[in-house]
Image (tube, rainbow, N blue to C red; front, side):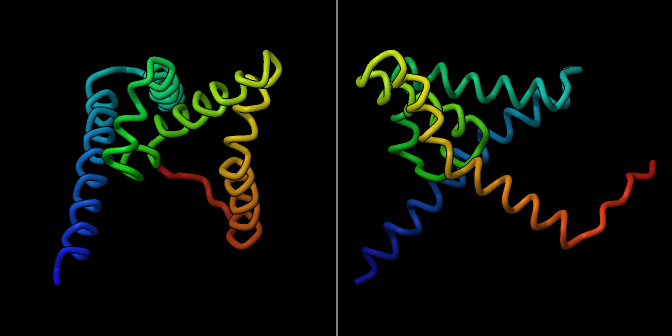
Length: 127
């Protein structure tokens, strides 16, 4: 009777723990290093690419779902996964596969950023 609800709750819990662990590692890097935000983002994305290239990130995605795909390392996973699948079609497919796999997310980010910029007035940050 409660089995489907427990499975949904278990899925949420796994996603929360894995996504939280990734974010916790990022926060530790922010607190204890002098790396800029851009360098940290690129590092996490490249870690996602490397782990998927080694075939390890897929296990994390299968286990945690959105907990592994929503952080920036999930974008690296998406690019690497698209490149691997595209490479089956040839050398040029490795490049187009990565771009086509990430095109929906990048398009959404650009479109929604534009809409928010049109709706709200930006202000400079005051220290």
